[in-house]
Length: 66
Image (cartoon, rainbow, N blue to C red; front, top):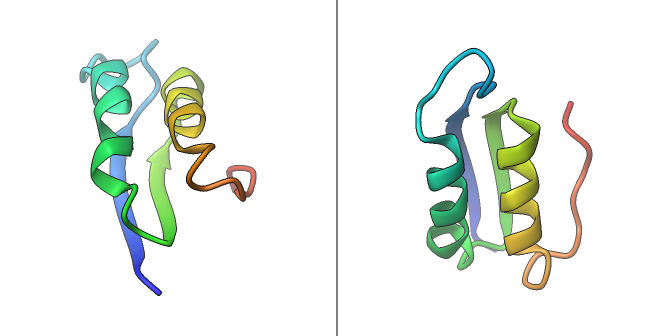
């Protein structure tokens, strides 16, 4: 089992502009090989949704943000 813990630094776009949506589109292609992925600082809902949608076929199980 391959586990990844990744601080993706997705602060809210309304407060910080750090290319969140661009990075959210790129992240899934780099993390798909892991069986379990834990994201930290996935605060921006739009960016989080992009990541979720792109990983849904390979990683169908997820929890809500806590």
